[in-house]
Structure formats: structure tokens, C-alpha cells
Length: 321
Ligand SMILES: C[S@@+](CC[C@H](N)C(=O)[O-])C[C@H]1O[C@@H](n2cnc3c(N)ncnc32)[C@H](O)[C@@H]1O
Image (cartoon, rainbow, N blue to C red; front, side):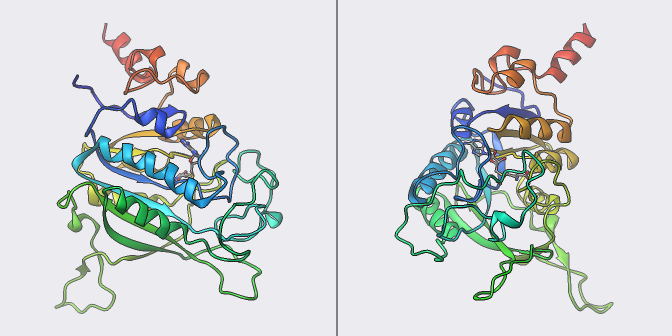
């Protein structure tokens, strides 16, 4: 059945929600999964709390397999992912510093010290696990074309009090495609040349190290990525009017940037409070049923209680009558 795609936010588990989405409807996916063993997002079924890195990677492979099915043949997946150290299991913030020094004043900052389990891994304490590349290789083995690793250099990374290694200031962004050939608008993301005279070109093709500060928007979500990052991915791999999906929507950065740039979005978020933040930020109303019943996905476009139409559409339909 032909479905209209509207800006939609599902509240619930990404795998369950994606299973209800028809094949080949999204142009691209821009997402950052929860980091392994670093945060407790306070929702049953959340990713990142698995006992072993292998289980974590396998869960992500299953979710991204559904993303591959729901992407168009020329679709692209962008995954922003950071590494984790094998250690106490007490949890760290994105830059690897322990939670202890971090303000816990906000209830939904997504950091809970104590609930995070110590990972069962063959790594020794203090070993870097290598999560980004474990995931990249697992996705490649599952059928994705692993096209590029991009370094997101955080220009304002958090300080760390470490004295036996350098302060971490980067994350990986992996670009993977469903097919050998795919939609990629290099011209839309070209960057200024560094040293240029009047006679030389002012712009060049985008390089694979992206220097950007961490997100300006924090709201009540601790791990939002910068709008500029999402914008680069969306402009390159989703034409105007196309649809972007983010199975780990968080505070809704992907959705906001998609909307601001004339694209549609579908977002999935397991934590109801974050989904509500994302809905406010993207000016997307959640239907009452979605808001109150976090598990009920009945149709692919929305929850069942609204017959697949969002509040906005319901209102529009009412107004048009
Ligand atoms: C790193 S954050 C995403 C942040 C987002 N990119 C932003 O800019 O706000 C990962 C999100 O995934 C959500 N999450 C965890 N497990 C999930 C699952 N199984 N299904 C859907 N969302 C999940 C968490 O609640 C968290 O908000």
C-alpha cells in the first residue's frame, strides 16, 4: 500500500518499530546509537547495557539490518559512534571521563552511575574496546558497503584528568551504503579551500575530518550531536523532499535538521521524555496514543490509535471538512 510519509516520531524500541515499516521508503539514515556501557537511558530494552560488546554489536546489526531493508536502493546510512574503555562499569561521559565529576542535577541527562554493569569482555581493565570498528566490520559482514570512516574532531571536547594518555576529542562517523551506487550530492557539502587566491577555486570537495563543536542544544539530553553534523549527512544523501530516518532520535537533532532543510523525517526513541523533547523541538505532535502507550506500534506510519495519522494531520483533516 502506498503510504504518505509525514514527520513522525515513534516512542518505543527501534527494532520493533522498524519491523512495521515497509521496504525501501527512506533516503538516508543519520543516527548515533547509545554508547556501549556508558549511559543508562532509563528505559527497558535500551541498547548499550548488554553484558558483552559482542551482544551490543549484534543488537545494532539487527537494527541496522531493518534500516537496510527500509532504505531505498540508493540509500545511505551514517552512524556516529564513540569508543568505550573496559573498566569499572561505572559509566563515563562521551569523552571518557568518569561520571563522578559530572552534574547530576538533571534527571534525564542520561547518565546514571551505579546501574551500568561491568562488561564481560576479553579486554583488560583500561583497554580501549574498539567498538566503532567492531561495529563497522560487523555491518560490512552483514551486507553493507562500508564506504568511509570520517573523524568528527570535537573542537570543544570535555577535559579529562588523565595523565597516562591523551585527552580524547574525536568520534567516528561511518558512512555505509545499501548498494554499490547510491545518491551522494558532493556539491551540496563542498567546503571552502584553506589557502586560496582570487584565481584559484574557493571551494573543494569535502574532506573526511570534520571539525565541529559538540551540540549547542542540550535540553535535557546529554548526548545530542551537532546540527551541523546532521546537516552535512542529510544534504549529501537525501534530496529535497526525501525522507530521513533516525532509530535513536534522542532530542530530535536529525528530525529538526531534516525539517529545516526541506526533508521529512521519521524518528524512533525508546525514552518517552526524550521523544517529547524531540517532538517539541521538531514541532511534531505525538498522537495521544503514542504519548501514553509506548509499546503499541500497529501501523508503519504511526501508532494504531491514530489510524496512522498524526495529530497535525487529524487537525488538518478536521479543518478541511
Ligand atoms: C546517543 S543518543 C542519540 C542522540 C541524538 N543523536 C540527538 O542528537 O539527540 C541515543 C538514544 O537512543 C535511545 N535508545 C536506546 N535504546 C533504544 C532502543 N532500543 N530503541 C530506540 N531508542 C533507543 C536512547 O534513549 C538515546 O536517547
